[in-house]
Every structure is written in C-alpha cells, then in structure tokens.
Length: 221
Image (cartoon, rainbow, N blue to C red; front, side):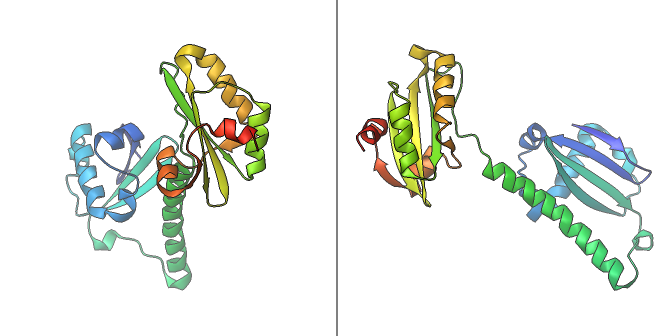
C-alpha cells in the first residue's frame, strides 16, 4: 500500500488485492457500499499517518480506479459547496454522467474478468494429487482425446452443462512427478480448453454422464 499527492486537494492511495483482503474488502463493495469506502479511507489515513492532509475537510469525493494488481482510491477534499465545480448546460452534465458510468463500467469489467477467468486447475508442484478440468464444445472432441491421449490417470469424470462437456482429471503427481503431469495436461489441452467452472459447481449444477472412469468409457464410444 502506498499513496501519492496528486495536487493540494487530491491524493491517490494504491491498494493491492492483498491489502483489500487484509481489510476484509471485496471488489464488489466499491460498487454498492459508499459507507464502507469512507470507513476504509479513514483506516488507510490512520495507517499511512497522513491525518494532517485532511485537517480542514468538509466534504470528500472518492473515485475508485481498478488496475491489474488492485485498485487506486482517489480522494479529493472539498472544503464547501462553493468549491464544487458543476458543468454548465445539458452537454456538460451528460459528459460528467458518462465519465462516471465509464468508471463504474471499468470496475464491473474487472469484476467480470476476474469471475470469467478463474483458475480451477489445482497444479501445485508439491501436492501428491492434482486435478484439472477441460471444456469441450462437442462430445466427439472428448472422445478423440480419450483415444489419442492414453494415460493411467487416477480418476476421470464427465459432465454436461450449458451445451458444453467437462472432463475432470485427477492424477497422481507423487508417483509421476510434476513434469509428467503438466505434460499430460498440455497434451489434453490440444483437444479442449480450460474450464470456466469449478468441479464443485459442476457436481451441483451439471448433468453427470460418467461419475468415474470417464476416459475408459469414452474410449469405448
């Protein structure tokens, strides 16, 4: 966490995702909880020991700007209403509203990206067992994989959800080694793509086709 003085009335506090976690803050809180943003600000001011920079504060405005490693919190001090600058005319007001909506859109886009690109592969090079999930547009692609990539994995499952098929692979890394398991995953990704759902979500919401020995069953198709 760090801060930068932008001008005599504005500072920028840069927070990493680790900082947000330490303060028990989720990205979604910035969209729906103005009170939380203010509370977080005062906590940060105290931690950074910059209370003197806001000694004459009457009103403050907050802007949240996401970045790949976290968020920037821009805080602007407004001493009174006379100091607040409002645009003149309908075009100026529309421009101000468009800018505000764009900032909210940036935040929503970041949240969507975080949600749509999860890492459901458990590829820990120190774990005894690891699993990964592959997504297929057609069942025939999963059949091709099962016939082209022959390997003695510990277990495999096949699910169908939202017009796609998902193959879960559990492998014994303690016996094979991280390199061999990673190579197997890379070979399988030639036929499918990484999953956009966790195994837990598939178990709860998807239709189960093969609960066990999915690869062996697909080879017989």
